[in-house]
Image (cartoon, rainbow, N blue to C red; front, top):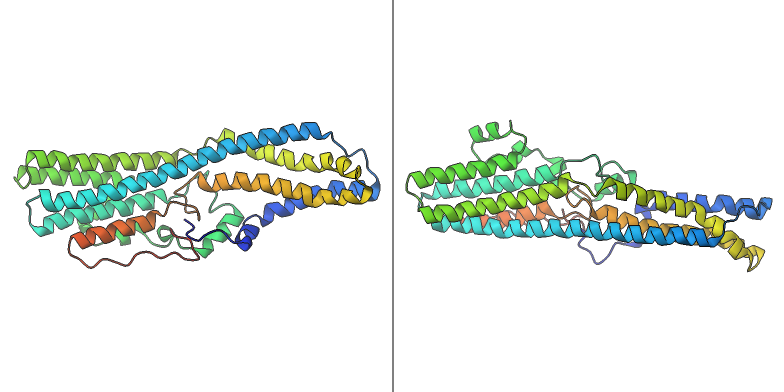
Amino acid sequence: MHVGRFYTVKEVFFWTLRETTVFVVAAAIPTLAWAFFGHKWLALPWQPVALVGTAVAFVTGFKNNAAYGRLWEARQIYGSIVNLSRTWAVQVLDLVTSPPEVKRALVYRHLAWLTAMRFQLRESRNWERVRVNPADANYTTFYDVAEWKTELPAELKGLIDEGELQKLLTTKNRATHLLAAQSRALQELSARGETTELRFVELQKSIAGLYDAQGRAERIKNFPYPRQFSTLNTYFIWLLSVSLPFALLPELEKMGSAYAWLCIPLAATVSWIFFMIDKIGEASENPFCGGPNDIPITALSRTIEIDLRELLGETPPPPIQPRNLILM
């Protein structure tokens, strides 16, 4: 998540440099053929191109709305995780009559769940371009994604015992199994009379809420923005970018032969604007992929850890600070 007031012109320039170069070349080729070689037949009526532009605007707007919806839902999910985590810790401390080390184990296992969750959500998917697209991959060097630089077993050490850790590492969905372990621990506490039946039910409700939040986060992670919409929108933008110079040249010629050269900056600028709108949506549609516009799940998990450790009377770790105004 970018925590500055805005992206700088330099950042935007390098983010779109590759495509902008293509737009300039696509506009320059027909302009040079028109001006130097007299190929006046390289002309299209502007009305069909304008219709394509209108269609692109509608489809791109639809994509951006859907992408923002995915981003905002992801933020709401992690907001609910923050609240449920605090609730869980307070319930464990107040509703369970076990010794302090047992309560600490329940809270620590929850921190392990948060850790497993963020590692699972940072795994790459085929449709996520952050580590594939050259411009995006280069930008990842300017900020830190902790889950790409550390290993899950090392992060879980000290949160759960070694036997549970080794068993957990043999499972695929570690977060699910950690919540299941919490439920089994509560059953054992209930059997020993260290929590009442009513309190047991309340604690189980918190686990159910965490399962629900995990499932909603996994749905966003594992179900991409529909590829048919994304693919067609990309094709439409490139169709507009390629055809735009051929519609601009005859219109600019009416103002004088020298004005034909304005086709290059005008066509490139219009293409760049449409492309930028599309790229904004693309950068928002996968809010857990490790991009600079991601939900800062690592920082949010650290915030929860600080709160929970303070509730346990422990010294918390420091908050995660942004690097180059990017907080992950």
